[in-house]
Amino acid sequence: MAMLPSLPTSPLPPKPQEAQEDQECSDFISTLPRGGWGPIRTRKYQGFWVLEIALPSVMTIQKNFKPRPDDLFVVSYPKSGTTWLKAITFATKTRTQYPLSHHPLLSLNPHDCVLNLEECFHKGQASKIEALPSPRILAIHMPYSLLPDSMTSSSCRFVYICRDPKDTLVSMWHFREKTRPKTMEPTPFIEAFEAFCEGTSAVGPMWDHVLEYWRESQRRPEKVLFLKYEEMMDEPVGKVRRLAEFIGCPFSEAEEKGGVVQEIVKLCSFEKLKNLEANKTGTQGGPGMVVTNDSFFRKGGAGDWKNHMSPEMAQRLDGIAQQKLRESGLTLGSVGLEAASCNDVPARGP
Ligand code: A3P
Image (cartoon, rainbow, N blue to C red; front, side):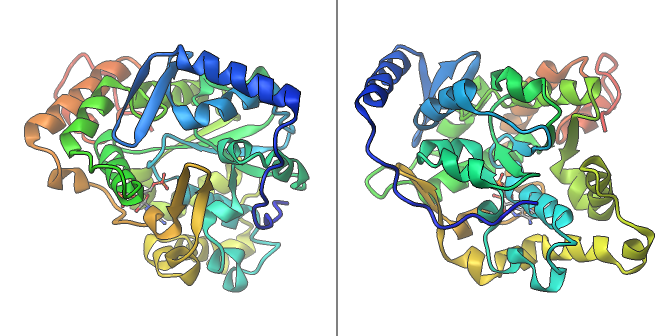
């Protein structure tokens, strides 16, 4: 069962051999193509634009991370609903361990309940991951093709959440503006938009990130559960039931009758979490990327892109996603609506 992590500790200074490896790693990174916008500085690595600051940890995970067969990973393209999915997964998995009325999510930020692998490695806290008892719930943003074989070929499982790319971009822009160092100039939205369309935003291109997990969910539905933010908004109870089945702890008849599913949905709702003290105060992240807990709860919901994009911009972004997802059976955001009148786009996905 997932154990709650203790407070972060400072990493030890690197040993000489580690220092040399660090140097080789930064030399290698400095040769990679650069992308991104404003505070998001990315490098093209194995086909994806990875945050420069996160790249050393991504490479270390590829080399050193040892998954356990019963690990469960919450996965997302950033700003797609990770915090929500972490809360729902954690609450569902631990519901018999903690009564929902006194659940850790009432006093801890969801990111403190489900640790992010890249962040722990970035902070030199891989040992915290090792110390967690099985079965662990962990989170990652890494694209599927960048994961080590040990993760893709073992029996560990992935729950993936995706969101309308337009809302994802708007959310990311706000998040980065809110967390931007005071010394840095604001980034005009249009600049973020262009980089996002080009795919150079963090772990972009988003459509490739989504597609890889989508394809794997189609190929191995027992390994990857693919969820959509908008569908979770529309039908949270059904999606929590589906998640519980996927992670091997379906709700019993007694739990169903007792309204446990609805209680989990309520506990993890935007309104509930946003107003908890633990989510109004405190921080996440590590050196070079500290963010306040309240930054993870902005507006919630679907369609805020309408307040930031012209119809032409929205059409352009939808068009790129539509083109990239062609023949995959997957649609995202309003692309699905357009697809209804477009003969050469396959039927809607899940
Ligand atoms: P907005 O910026 O559009 O409001 P992530 O968790 O991947 O960083 O994504 C953050 C987005 O999810 C933000 O979107 C945030 O408001 C929204 N969010 C956070 N908690 C949520 C919840 N419990 N239910 C629905 N949306 C949530």
